[in-house]
Structure formats: structure tokens, C-alpha cells
Length: 440
Ligand code: GLY
Ligand code: MN
Ligand code: MN
Image 1 (tube, protein in one colour):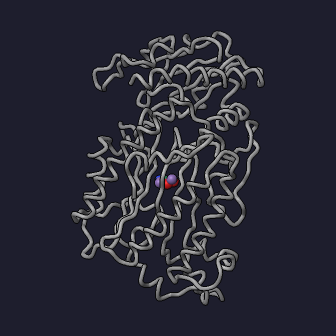
Image 2 (image 1 turned 180 degrees about the vertical axis):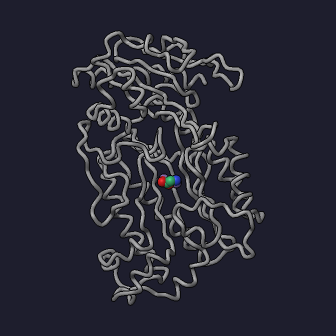
């Protein structure tokens, strides 16, 4: 914890610096950042799991306490209004005895709807940052999530502080333990559901704590990009296993994917080829590189793999031009990672919010930014047998470019994705996932 504590002060200084900068530019007095409110389930007396406002957890690792508020102006010590009701039904959040508390003036709020006296007297020039516009209205905020402030924050959030990098390395460390347990469970014959239980037990996090729903897919289910069904029954024959699963640490996410073959076969060789390709793409990351260019380079590489494994005929350029690579690899190469799995800011070209859309031929690319030191991205190439997309090729001239026997042979394996979390440094890349021990 020592490590983190030292870096935390600098993290808060950096956030204060950003706030001071944007407030001055926008002629605002400060930001009032709301942790959020519980959402009630329809016709029920229970709430959905609470998901904290990412702008709140950027300041402090409190992710499970609604009705908290932060008052920041970039100059004064931030004020934390910490919700601590008198309640004998639910667990009441104790103020943790932990390093971050000394960075805030802390006040306690007993009743969620009585925050008004804690807010600045003149809130005309204070902006509400949060999800609950109705609450902001009642409190009299005229400025709610001003676009210029949001763009500025989202743009700069891509550049991680040293504290954030420590959190993200720990999230990776935790997730890697889960991936190792899941791999063992797969080779021991577990069902998708059982693999998920092994994964969660190994990371010590519940389904509501992980940053996204795990994708745990056996055999042809690996071709379903957002597969979250988790079959309880083990398949009779076991061919392949794709796991896309993460972990959280202090509100920061890991997002990791691996694919395994049950036997040494052609699919296993394809995994080896995709692993090599993935590492080559990681090597292309550097300050000044365009993420879009690396995504497009992946299409070249996937085209070559399709030729080498006799999925497709012709030359790589033709396969790309005819949309063949997009059928086998339909998603984006990766995205910014941090407080959110798909972190905000992937399309922002500058702090004023200039948006760079993905190229028309690549609509699912989530990051078009020019990379800088201390950006954290995922690199996640894939190759899948997706029949609904293949049907489009089959129906026209392009069917000649595909070797349908190979497609049939690989269909039972579903597909492959390999995903690492990488920090771009000035002089090198830090592949957090592999450095935490998930080598292949
Ligand atoms: N797990 C979601 C993604 O890889 O983007
Ligand atoms: Mn991802
Ligand atoms: Mn993922």
C-alpha cells in the first residue's frame, strides 16, 4: 500500500491541475461530482447493483457508496461529502482508515436528500457532474455536465498517472490468477458455468465486482462475440475455449482474453499464429502512432493468416478490399482502458472535443487516437467463423475467394481472440497482462 500512497498525492495534484485549467477556461467556480444514486427495480423494493459515476471514482477508490459528493475547484483541498446514514437494515459504509482520506476535507451526510446545506452557497457557477439531472434540478444547478468540461476530462483521462498505472497492474495481476484457474478448469472438463465459478473464486470478486460480464465460451460459442449465456451442461466433445474476463482494482479495470485448443491440432496452430500476430501489433504501439493505422495493419496480418491456413485465396490486398478480412475479424483492434472497460475519450483528437470517427469500412473501431506516453489500451485481434457474416460472402461473387472446406473444418472451434492490456511508455511498451504471468 506504501507504493500507492506516495503516488496518490501526485494523482490528486494532477486532477486538481486539470480542474483548475478547465475551470479557468470555462469561467466556472468549481465542479460538484455526484457518486450516484441507487436505481430501483420496477415494482420491487430492491435496487439494481450500484455503479458509481466514473468521474467520482477517478478521485478516490470508493465504488460502493451512493449519495456521496465531491466539491473540487482545483485550488482548495477537495471536500468529500461522505454518505453515512443511520440505518439498521443495510451495511453502512465506514470511512476507511486508509491513505486517501488525508487528501480531503470530509463531511458526513446522514440523509441522502439533505445535501443542499453542504453545497457552495452560490452554485450559479458550479457545474453538476453526474447522472441524476433531476437531482441537479432540485438543487438548483444550471450547469449540468457541460460539454466542454466533459470533453476536457475525457480527453485527459487517457493519460494515466503513476497511481492509476499501479491500480491497473494490480487489476491485471488479479485477472491473470483467474485466467490460470479457468484454463485448468477447462482442461479438467468443466462446463462454462463451472469455469466462471473457478474464475471468480480465483480472483476473489463477485459477478457485480468484475468490470464486465465474463465471456466464457466452449466450442462454437466462441464465435458469438458477446456470448454471456454460460451453459451449465458440459459439451459431449470439447474442442476449444475462449475466455474474455477481467477484474477490478480500486475502480480500474483489466480486460483480458485467451483462447485454448483442447488437443494439439490445426486449431492450436492457428492460435499460435494469432498469438504471434498479436505480439507484433503490441510492438507497433508507441507515442505518435495512430491506433487506426495499427487496426488497419491487423487486417493485413489477418489476411496473411487466412491465406496461410487456406481459409482464403488471393493476395492480402484483395481480401481486404473485398471485405473478406472484416468477415473473419469484424470488431475493432482494441480500445482505451481505465476507469471503464471501454474508457471514454477513444475518439477525441484534442481537449476541446474534436471527434475522429472510425473509417467507414471499420465502424466498430473504438479508438482513433494518436497514442501518447501513459496511454493504456487493449490489443485484441480475433478470427472467427461467424455464419451470418459468411452468408453475405457466400451469396455473391466473393464466394470464390473462400475455401469453404476449411471454414467447415474450423466451425466447431468457433473462433480465437487474444487480448492484452498495454501501457505505452515513452521508450517501450509494458504488456501488463504478460508481465503478470499470462504468457500464452
Ligand atoms: N471485454 C470487452 C472487450 O474486450 O472489449
Ligand atoms: Mn477489450
Ligand atoms: Mn475483452
